[in-house]
Image (cartoon, rainbow, N blue to C red):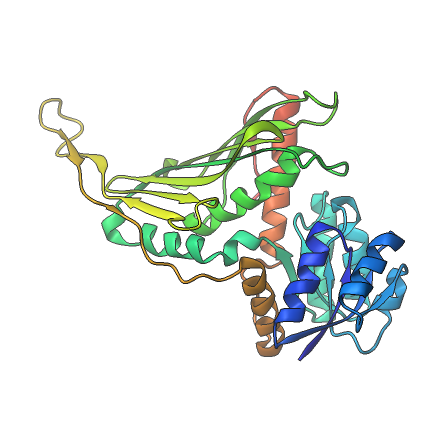
Length: 337
């Protein structure tokens, strides 16, 4: 059994504590938060967990094997660095850091200390996302043309990061997971409607190898809550609707592709495919629990996590390029590879 310390008892922190409590492989022995009211709530719900307001109490506790960090994004670097330096395996919520160089430093520190560093890109552990990965990598799906993601809701407004840093990491990570490669460039525009300096709406275009395009729309101010990802291919289209509990994935066996000699006008033809709409059966499981179980498995087997430090660094690089493009009103920015 892996003994866990959780730092940060807000929305995600309390979910981590609850999920770890319900799993046989983990036991939360200590939690930390600067908010005493939150600690009282945690202690009342989980009386066996020792609460503290001092990060050092968790970091220096020899009975703790691993740390889960669910604090504000700007604190991720400092706390993760301290945890790794003190020999703790670390699972940190996304983003890994708000700075590229800091993210690189954390990766090197994890390697030096021989400790596992994992980033909480929870959607990579979603059974529906994994089912889509199976479909789009089959020859029957055809060539992938583009991907589109919409992640909108009225709130929750965060103080530490803007809407793009809050919401877009999910889809950036999923797109790279689907395609097996990282974006080469990004173009982004956004709007600051609630605060002058913090975008609460973003429209992001990503360019991938083989001319594949990814598009992401995020918003804190749209009253229509949408959590959707679409992958369009030459033979099929697949749609993931995270708000549809009955049919979270639908495969449309419809597509369009060109056959014949495209250099000879009149020789090529546009082939249209029209077929069934399939809603595959997907075993129900909680992505957060899947993520924690994967973390524990990596500790036990000494294997590299799916969402490791390098994966987290890639997302931070993309977000940094988005920031540069925003400042230039959508001018494309290259993403360091």
